[in-house]
Length: 123
Image 1 (cartoon, rainbow, N blue to C red):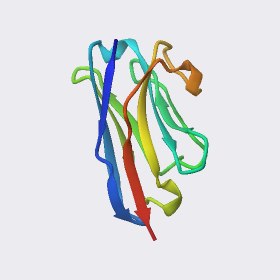
Image 2: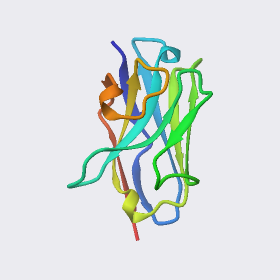
Image 3: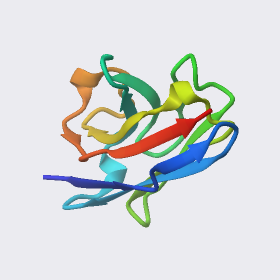
């Protein structure tokens, strides 16, 4: 059973940057494809970014391309999401998730989820 804990959320002004981190315990992260999802109030969860188990492949949601970067450090059992040029539309709870698949792009493919970290972007 993998436990995931997100950190790094907060309230920032539009145009700022934030770096979210996800720390895993209870299993080697190198066995899991990892992803970041977000859920804004009144909206369905959506994938932000995903990275393959060994970090060789990445995928980004349409609105994040060029602004967000997902990375992982399997030696430290962590995954990060670097977010730049944040917009008010990025306001949401961000979740880290682990999948038994090498690279997973949909919610149903993920087996373990963190509790989430709030990101609020003011205009």
